[in-house]
Image (cartoon, rainbow, N blue to C red; front, side, top):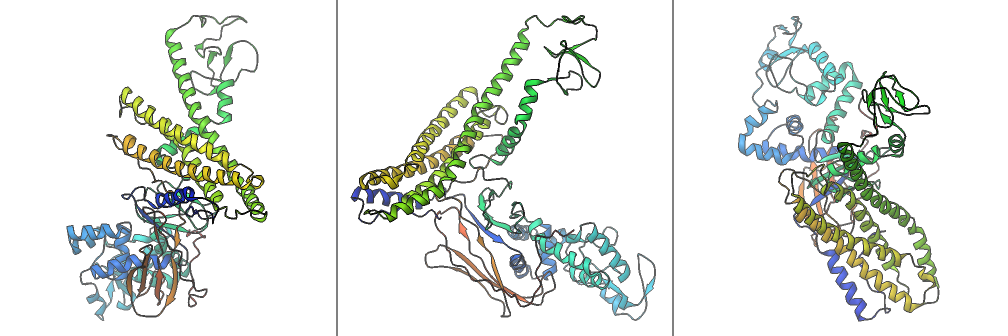
Length: 601
């Protein structure tokens, strides 16, 4: 259910409630951070070719080059069109193409092919007819057999995206049309793999496009324009961090979350049991369990040691003592080490237990959705003047988002105020001041989240109209307070904690009052009209539509024109989106599309 604005019940609330709803509506529409923005769209197997051709056409129009040269250029610069424009102004057209191995000068090797005399191949040294030889754009000419073998080897080695000329010290990239033509004559399957590699290069070599990490794989990719440190939702329903492809973890940075996941896995029940019931060998450091007998144990590596203190010893011993060894005397250094490790464990358990408690609460509250729907249905059917219960669903969605944010603040605090990442960034005094500031924000958020959860768990289908109105007011007020607390928490993290850092940079995904918006699908259909490129914005300025017809043949050699629409939503201005979408045609003109669920191996 979408998280719509909060609207007052019809005739059930007085003017105070209406003013409260209006305030919430205005607050929800106010962007949290106008600097950080991103536009996300889903690329399916049907729209991949259109998405690739969109960027190809941009470079072809500006540089006046062929499609295969534009693809080679974009692969070299990782499909960053803006980077190509930037380097074009700095280096110029010729140097820009030369660095990428693109030859835009006249092909001098064509003169040899126009001759009627045989041509000597520089690889196999065989004389062949000009019709059985091919010259690349760089001017090097060899027989078709040698070219074909070279292409097949490169494709099988996974170098389809940048097959270089066979000539020594020549960095020119071979014409993909020539590669496709020669390979297809002998190995059609290999030629299909070559086409697939070129098509998927738009995802594999593109920093702004990544595969959806869903398991099993849904076959979709996500394209982001703007800030890559964002959280997105695929059409399959999976929400994830676009930068690290892990689950959504804001306000933790990607590094913090990666370290936290590893630490939690390392601190699993098995590891805890091993720590409690074993001692590490002083020689090979393997855990050793004592299953009986005296305190002298022998590791599989042959080392004898005392099980009480872990110190290495000899093998001479009696039942009550070990020869030449005594560990009953107290040592200050050992006590210091034990206390340090104990404090570290206590600190970790403090943050882990609270993180685990909120994640468990999130799972339990997620199960409330079905129960809430049943309560709403019963309340709407009973004889009462109150029929609008949208505030319950809105409050529940607000609870989900705030509970998730609250749970991730504990891993953030564990690393922000610990010694693992920011030991040299703050003095002890500065760290304590910032920690107190953060924990005050965290405590307020936690208190209000628990209050909101308490009111939403009420069985309001049994309440009177007056009690329902009172509960409704509390839910609306707490929803607004919780949303503002989340915004203040993020402002504290970004401005007071992360911004002052001098030696390290940590980025977090921005907070969204309305939650993650599902990435709009990049729809694609086929048309034979002439080329057209229009950038349109609807009357409200709420969606970005780009209609483009692309001429020429694609990576698969398709003599078709592609028309596509991009419906995107900005994450900077929340609640600004459009649900309009052009219907996809079922039959794309008899064109065989690649199945991106099948790997190109």
